[in-house]
Image (tube, rainbow, N blue to C red; front, top):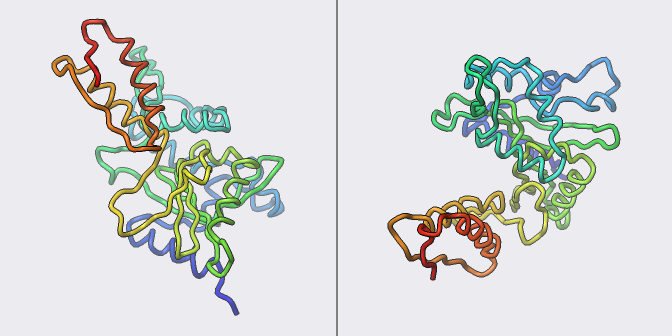
Length: 282
């Protein structure tokens, strides 16, 4: 009898996640927290259910934003109206970076909406669950493993049995199907992975082109997450170019590193600067 995918891959990942501090939420509990109705036939329980742990997310929003006074479902309604594509995903990244906004009615001004406490990570709730089902009314999918921070799903893992030929390729193809059929899943989920317990491939949501999917190698010190993703390089380039003291600089890129994207964005910022502040760029 061949070992099952769940036993050899999925269960091991869940066990490791618990060892490093993630709390395991059973499938049954996760579905209850997402509003599944146990009376409804199993095939329909996931239809248009929440993609968050609503109660936890709202509790953390109130904890991190004492002046937030909107109704419990207001933020979730806002998230549900984001485009179910890379643009909605990019908008959600801003929320994950605590750059979303809410209105402080008492002081009549906008404030940053904090969803994750980066200064004190222990204030966040880290959870992992399995068999994350969703149905958008047209298609239904079920992700093998999902990691959540403060009730927000941010990473999914597709597990495949190593006995299958081209197991990871099959996993990536399945993730591509998820993008096509249930794009709602990838508004908040920022990373995807596919593994057969031997190999481990990963990439960023809405970028499943093969050249942008990377193999995890334990002996390497550097792991790469691109695009959204290159904003750090852009910001560093712009800040260096606009430095009021230093007037010369060199931007160095290896082949294929996205230099065109980076330099275009840097140039856009640079040419908006006052004439006196523009440095000489080599």
